[in-house]
Length: 204
Image (cartoon, rainbow, N blue to C red; front, side, top):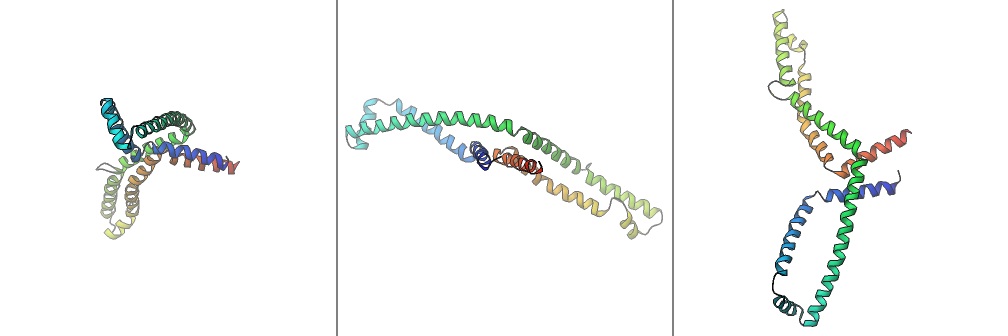
């Protein structure tokens, strides 16, 4: 894949991510407010709107020129927004199809991470069962005649095993968060796709 194609894919992905951003949601709220104000303004009597426009622009001729510019600008914005909206939907369909294997992999990983977290934590989780199993093993060894200190060293699972499970559990929320972030980010998934594509091209 050429650098141009990679850049084009990433550009589309970033644009789609922008549509899921806090800035977009804030912009959308303000745009809806502006639309409501335009509707309210359209219901005001024309004489009042014209008089206000003349006062704002200084003369009837300037008020007319201003509204002509506004009509031209709105016509251009309408065309640009319509084309951009159509392009965005096309880009979304294209990337959804292209990234489907990556997305499926992330969904599978998310399920596995959550299942692993559930398996480790809680009173019946692997960690607690490992602690119980260790204490039982120590008791059996002591009962068999080993000193407590030696039993501590020989009992399975070891303290290191249990601590490793604890570290794994502590790291899982961060892994889950990072995986979820990739699932909701087109740019993140495109980066994964490009990395896999590069690896396959180099291996070929």
